[in-house]
Length: 219
Figure 1 (spheres, rainbow, N blue to C red):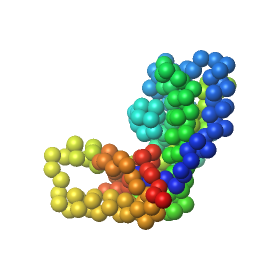
Figure 2: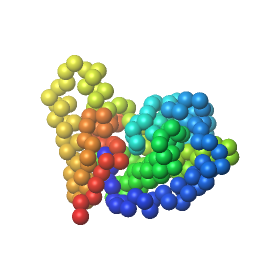
Figure 3: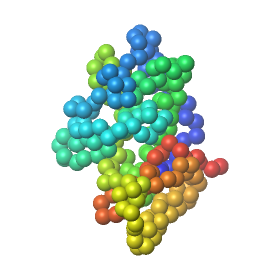
Figure 4: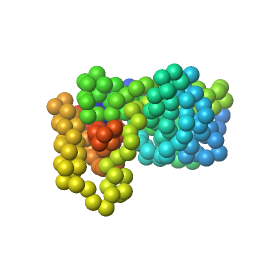
């Protein structure tokens, strides 16, 4: 969960959509590999900094329209979570260009949300490390990406792994999640997808909220 300040999502990705749609008009939309669910970034170095180690799976904005990876910083060796928007998933939809625009706008919405969270210094919200657009080569579509802190797990996985949890764990978890929601509510933000899989575990059982695409700012 993260703060969402932006209300006009169409303004976030206009230039990006125009650039991508121009590429689409020149050539068929194609993924970076034959698997449309995986942009195939393993082994590549995103923007000369983030070495892509392995794929985690589909998640986030647009459901299966994004793919997650574990990455490592080339200099500091810090590991992080990379989320990329796979525009190739728009292929086969009734209106690919419209689908692409929707996806890019939603991804831009999430990216701006994370920037706003960072500016507000919300300690219980996932931290944005980097974001940008990566161009694998001139013949492939650009890859829009966001880099987050890498969690060790989430509440759903923890509950699935353990048949029972202690009262102390439960109370600590609920307290930390309540703090995260309070941080959002103080700034007039309502999260619309609160669930265990969006409660990420960091370090020694510390929780932070994730998934920034389902927030609305109250007016």
